[in-house]
Image (tube, rainbow, N blue to C red; front, side):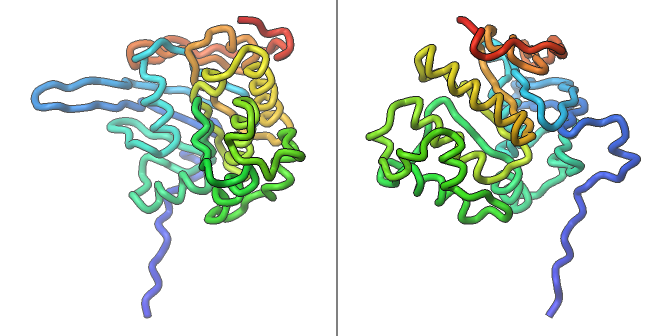
Length: 251
């Protein structure tokens, strides 16, 4: 019986020199409809480090969602390369991309996408069943402040509590990258700040790279790095050496 050899998609130390934990070089995404070619993203280049809290800012249609889909392995770039922790994501085949999404990326969305017929604990447990090095679901729910709500169903939880469950579900996978798409968009001001505080602490205490995609420019003040995107291109990448404490944030 022959054994299938695992394809090496990792870059050599020489190829990784000068690149960050998450590194994009000349990334583009084109959509073709008949004779019409649309550049959703063009020549996107930046580097991020593990443990950073990063905000990607842009208006509707700027390319934020396309970028998030490429980072999360939900879509394929048509140019350039994306490297996460030494692995060239743009070289992964279909099965490898499934494994990448399963093990290396955690997703937090604006709408919580919880299974209504499962408890908070069961929603987290079902997400980690097929992950290799997952964390303990009960322990993670305790860490996000839901120790006494584990056996409640989504309909019995507030919006902020449901978002905490979705964050716990993403963290429990023990991913290398946590992607958050407008994570406070469906929440009130106070609850939104609590969720941002939780995400920020995850980046620091758990040493996770957290990328928040949003149109809310106020959030930029708490970020370690701010990436502005406009018309599919990077407008600026700015380091923030002194992020504002989340409790001082207003919008």
